[in-house]
Length: 493
Picture 1 (spheres, helix red, strand yellow):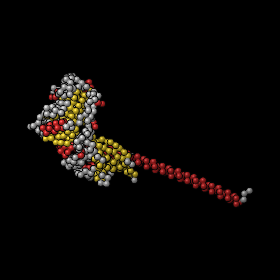
Picture 2: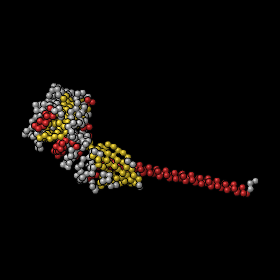
Picture 3: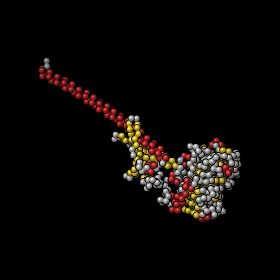
Picture 4: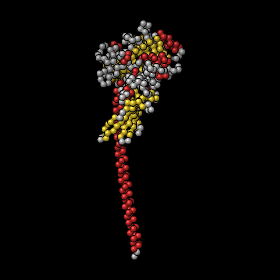
């Protein structure tokens, strides 16, 4: 029989054991409570952060809508955005939104860059500096938590310009007899001169007016189906009569100060060393013949200033080796010249010439390009010369048109080999006048008062291919015709 002392020790052990179990259970319960509380807090935090992320992304959507109206709105809005010199960003004020029952706030910041270097605009009311990339950051916060997201945009020529042949003239579309007379009403006319399958278009045709086909099958409105059967080859679509619709092509071929390009800017760059300026056709003829004799094209921005009193047609008797330019060829007519005043190019014309040795007109894969041009005569790059503050400097990644003329008409009748954009704010004529010759454009043809493409009744081919890479970054005046295109998105935090 245990003694009283032993019994006391046993009772004490039982009590200690019970206390240990109670404490253990309490610890487990406490741990479970803490874990439950932590899990609840973590779940709440995750929910809040998810809402913050949605809010930050909503901020980017808000910014995009505003940028569509004005890509420089944060710069112009000095009251709403402060320029933070330490981060070179235009930082806005907090904007509140409701997500469920929670009120959340986002803040937008904008950083404009040129060739990777952040820009502070000299004048906020009239920002003129060029930029090629925009970073937008949206920061959402609540109760000490934040999420940040960012996206990057660049300006590209809008989808409305996506066609091999494009006319922004708005016309009645009424028939007036076909051929060149129809085109001069502002329409697009493809005339095969009675010989079918000699014209090839890859990338479609767009017109605010009407597109027509004339020649072997008669004079008819051109449709996509008809283009595929009537032309030698066709891809894309014929989208015409766009004037007055939601798809209307913007009119950037009107008055001199409403055109797609700033001709003064191009001349200033050429004069500053990025090319040459020739006053009169005679000076250009002399320079071109000298370059041909040396086996070297003229390079850079080549500006030819014409004079109606001394002008003449450029034919093989004057430039037997043809016009050969690597870069951008600009013809300038005097202000007030008759829109149908023309200079005929009867000699061969090559601007950024493509190698056509393996060209098969029906095979789009064989449409090679000479763009971008590679210069061999020292500095000819437009972005390497300084023409500020009189004009915006050209950008490193900017595209230049291959052939552009101001008012008047450059009537192309001879062999043609062009890689890049052809821009004529008035009437555009591409006519295959000599049997057996090739006329080739890999880029885009933009006309403002009608486009007439005439084949040859005996022999020869005309090929047109839309090339986005040579026009998406066109150096348009104050970014006319361009839209914002998102290039990247990331979650910063």
